[in-house]
Length: 277
Image (cartoon, rainbow, N blue to C red; front, side):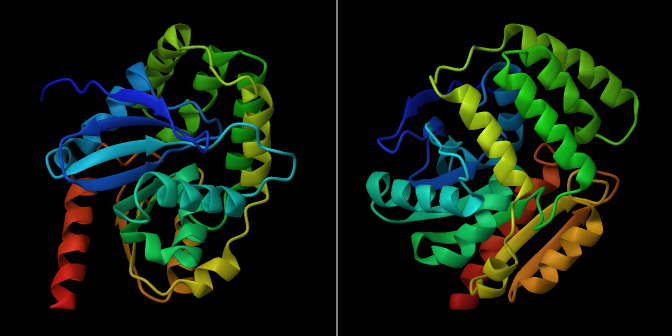
C-alpha cells in the first residue's frame, strides 16, 4: 500500500479536515476526541490503514469539531455543526458517514436529526453511555492536552485502547514517541475547546435521539471496549429501530484496523442498496 498523503484544511464553519482518496463518492469520518486536532503522523497512518479499502471509491474527509466552543456546548450542537458543514461544503448530501468513538456519539444525534444529508451511516466504537472509567480517562486526557502536556495525554489513553497485553505496553511507548513529535494545536481556542468537548462527552445523552432514528444504522464495536462496554452497546442497538450490530471478539477500543471493519461496512451498504431495488 502506498503511503497516503492527506491534504489539510479548515472549512468555513471552522471545522478542520484531512482529505485523501480518489473516488467520486464522499465519505465523512467523524473523528474521535476530545480535541479538535485532525490526526497527523503516527495517529493518521494508523487510522488510514483501516480506511485504505475505501480510497478508490471515495474521497475521504476526516473531520473533528469546530473551534471557539462556548461553555455548555453539547454533542447535539456538534451534530448540528456537521449538518451546516454538509450543506455549505457538499451540496447538502454525502454518501457515507462513519462516526468513530467521540465521532460515534455525535453520529447518534446526526442519524436522528439529519438523515436527509447522507445515504449510509455507521456508528463505530461508541454507545449512548460511556463507562465511568472512560469518562475519567478522557477528562484527564483533555486536561493534559489543555495544559500542553501532549506526551502524557497520549500515554493516558493507551490503557483504554487495548485489553491488557504486551500490545498495550508497546503502544504506550509508541504513543509517547508520537506525543514527542506531535504538532502543537493551531487553534487559538484549543485549550478551552478540548475541555468543553470532554464535558460534553461526560454529559452526553442521546436516548431520545436514538428512539427517533428512522434509517438503517450499522453499529461496530469491540466486545472488550473500555469506554463502551458491550451491555451499553446492546442497549443502544435495542433503542434504534433499524440497526445492525456486529461485535469483534476480544477487541478493545480500536477496531478500525481490523479487516472486517471495511468489509462489514461494504456489506451493509450493499444489502441496503439491494433492498431498494
